[in-house]
Amino acid sequence: MQILFIRIFSAFVVMFGVSVIVFFFIHVIPGDPVEVILGETARLSDREALREALGLNQPLMSQWLSYMSGLLQGDLGNSLYSRQPVTTLILQRLPASAELALAAVIVGIVLAVPFGMWAAMHKGKLWDMASSSFMLLGIAIPNFVFGPVLVLIFSLWLGWFPVSGRDGFLSLVLPAITLGTVMAAILARMLRSSLLEVMSEDYIRSAYARGFSPIRVMFRHALRNAMLPMITLLGLQLGGLLAGAVITETVFDWPGIGRLTVEAIQRRDYPLLQGCILFISAVYVVVNMITDIIYQLIDPRIRCAA
Image (cartoon, rainbow, N blue to C red):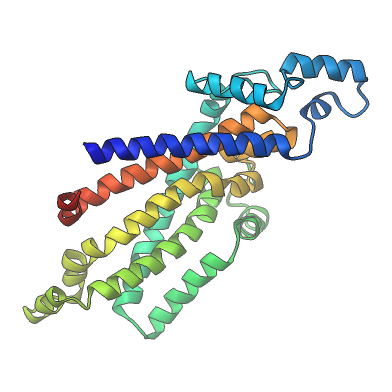
């Protein structure tokens, strides 16, 4: 119970640090949201009136204290551009991001587990080299290259999937593959390394000595213990999907949190951008806490140590 309290307190400290850093960095970066809203040709009096209405004419420290006061009450403020509550805008985009993240995780696991297992079972052979080449290729190709290539082949040439947007299951396939393939490559490499380490243990050799088949040894004895590092990495990757999805959602015009973040940057919408980054950071923190709990459920040694 004490450890849980410490982790929750640490999470609040992290979130506070993120909120402070993001607030001051955003306001220090050159750019004027008033100019973005009214345009460069707007009269000076109109600019000053809008700046006063938005509270941007106040000293920076006063703006920060006002922002932190609202944040402590669960209020992320209103968008400078649409004047809607930031919380409402994020919740509107959350289902799309959650749908894409879940689909990408499924794609990643479905690809990573067989590739990692197959590479570990055929260490140093042709299949191992082929799997390792796939993993390296998946890590090396960035999303902003892989995504357009998929669109070019499967949307424009073959016409199998929509080019962009969120309209049914088919529109989800290409973005999920774009995100999931990178995740699969990283997870497969981790799983292969973990399996090779586990398969050198004495209890694995004992299982082989009792006449168990390689498949049974792999699934019943090796895989569960090798999954521990993979679970940690999966938790980090799941949190990173929201941040990494910024590029993918932009490429496929997917209406999620990542796309909303890009729109906030383009419009210099301070409260919305702060809310998006704070939400992504909160997901990171929560996912890491859940990962620690799952870790303890799977490995009794960690539970006893805690």
